[in-house]
Amino acid sequence: MKVLVVAERKDGEVRRVTLEMAARAASFGEVEVVAVKGERYSPLTHGAAVADRAADADLVLVGATLNGRDLAARVAAKLGRAYAADCTDVRVGDGLTVDRPMYAGKVRATARLPLPAVASVRPGAWTLPAGAAAPAIAEIDPAADDGRLRFVRFEPTASGGKRVSLAEARVVVSAGRGLKGPENWKIVEDLADALGAATGASRAVTDAGWRPNEEQVGQTGKTVTPDLYVALGISGAIQHLAGMTSSKVIVAVNKDPDADIFKIADYGVVGDLFEFVPAFTDALKRVRGT
Image 1 (cartoon, rainbow, N blue to C red):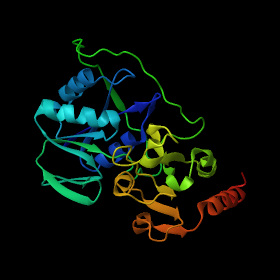
Image 2: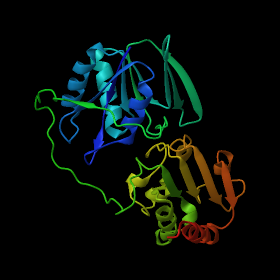
Image 3: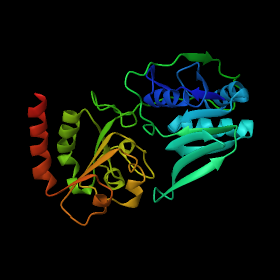
């Protein structure tokens, strides 16, 4: 069985989801990891190039990132193959079996597809083995540009300085309306810095303009699957849960003992976050000697 893994880079570095897919795909069969030349993703030229390279592959794996979801769907359409999107697990046997969330995360579905097929896999869905070597990546040329799309400009968002990006983070600290206002966000940032974490937010927070939209976690925001997700003052609306229920460990801090977030949390603290979080952050810094 031949598996084609499509690599994705960010700022010149191979994204972690590529390493995760390559490591797991090795148990499926022969693996080839490819990347389309060029730093900027182009839907038409990249889609055509990957589809051409994947013609003899039994399975194509793409990271379920912003660009990856677009690319995977285009490749499946070009090849006329079954496509499973946003998978949290993929198994090969008599055909392809995948697990994926549905209905805003309220249902976990298991589906079977015929091979050959294309699947996009959520970042963090598979554990990267300790000491796993980076795979060899074959560079392929993009297809000829027919001029239907024209790049205008790229406007980067604020990076948050030293803080890790939300999409790549193994630890995420998110907050909701319980923060009461943007002036209190330093509580979140201090804990995130102590944990080496990215910061996230609920939709209510981004809609209110407290935080930029790129920090939103949820059904209409980013889907994250970190090792640790800390939810501060987040009630647990289903739209938010859709973006973070695949986190390996969930810790919730909320003064409402009946908040829905506690139903899916592994650990919960019922209390005033303005008292608990600064004290916890200080204790964490003392333990780490920072």
